[in-house]
Length: 555
Image: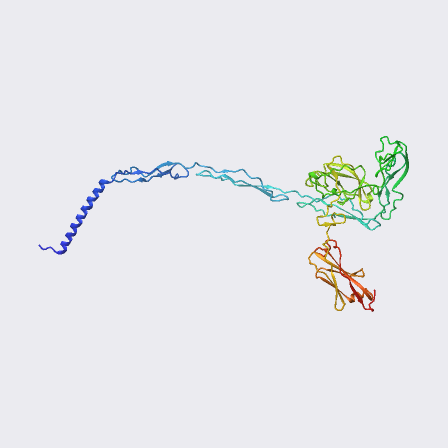
């Protein structure tokens, strides 16, 4: 039997494969005998799923678990199911419920009938899980009516105005009225006029005196004196009326023999034969015990105390206690000002803890002596506690100033205020050293200018070597034999020289030799060119002889 080479090759290959498989089998058996036995282990159950129904009780829930450790080495597999289930229920049945009704809306018409009003309500709880719905309406309506017709009503007539002329005829007066109730809902309107006029005439008014006031006390307590009384014009004349005739003041003599001997000695003045002489102002009487009762515009005490200004602010350590006032007439003459303030003053002003200010206006000259209220202030802001205590004083308007009949305040921490001025700030001054007319001190005296001639003595040049500033001006003046020629004054804001020609000199000088000089002064100026300070001391140049032709005319 012949065997081909192909068959022989195939047999060899099969035998080799069988040998290799036997070797692999032996190796697997050896490996099995060396691995440990591991049983399958379940993981923990997961959370239950949501119920499969939202309403009712026929739902289910499930949960799952997985293999945490797989079986190996011949170990046992995991027994049981990887899923679990249980029955569950959804939510209970919820019926729909209404909220309460809202308020009725305004009537749809403002006048008359035929209107409607509506109100609404909202669902408070919606139905759920097959509950009953809210089937009733959510809106209601009802009929309504607006306002009844209201007729226009006029108010009362106002008073007639003053006549348009104060003297003579041809004037008019008017009066007006206003609508008290306007028409509404078709009511009748106010068609009558709201203004009326009538003719009138001015009337002449005669002057009327007031009653005489009481006689004053006798001017002396011992011997012969005088008493006075006054009256004032109550109604001035107008429109050609008669003036007030007669005097506004009367005097009569009086005699007083009581207390002609000073029982307590001479407290003021000089003792002489049981009485007092040379009484200090404003005292009089045999014992200098009385105050002079005369026109307060001339008989008053001057108070020159600038710290009474409302702009003097004192701290607790610099407050002033002044106790030198008496019940008499005073005039404030201090540089701080001469009028009492008429608005609330803060505490600590006027150099006192509790300032006293005037509650009311100052009088006119025609009012004569008036009585006004004064307030003691304890205000810290100018609004509150402005008048914690009140008293009265007398005031009179004199020629350009006021006089006040004051009193000594009962407490040392109180004081009268006057004026609002303060001392000029450093580097400024005024005639009295106080505002409002403060000016800067004058500049330092400039160096002396130099006078020279040019162009054959036809021009005279005043030269000055100064530094120019925007807030400073220099003034040059010319002199002939010491005589100032103001017509040739120059304010040289720029430049360092001023020239004067012979033709100008001829207009003021005659022939002959004349000595010419120039002067230089400096002053501070504002941006508009007005003076900010007084001029400095004048610096004078050298003198130059001027020889004018004989035909020069002197004017």
